[in-house]
Length: 107
Image (cartoon, rainbow, N blue to C red; front, side, top):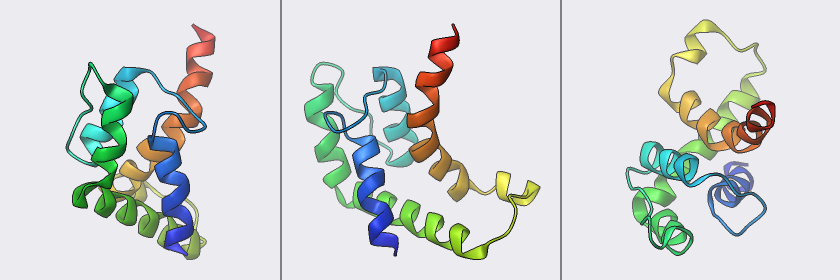
């Protein structure tokens, strides 16, 4: 199950696929999730190698595992969940990509 989640997450985080975020959002996601920011001069070309590193692959697996565990728990989102770093990282990886463009439309 987790492997089916890791691929869409990688698609969300890799430029040139379905979604594009601002350079600031892309750098923030990668810095928080993997610990490496893309090269400002070669941003698009530098993101895929970051995700291909051991740390990048581990982050994708951890995110996918968190998503799978939370989905299987079938419980409402609680106050304790909000403070879990793993769920915060999952939100940064998956929901930010979809919701930031909505917020930008309001300004």
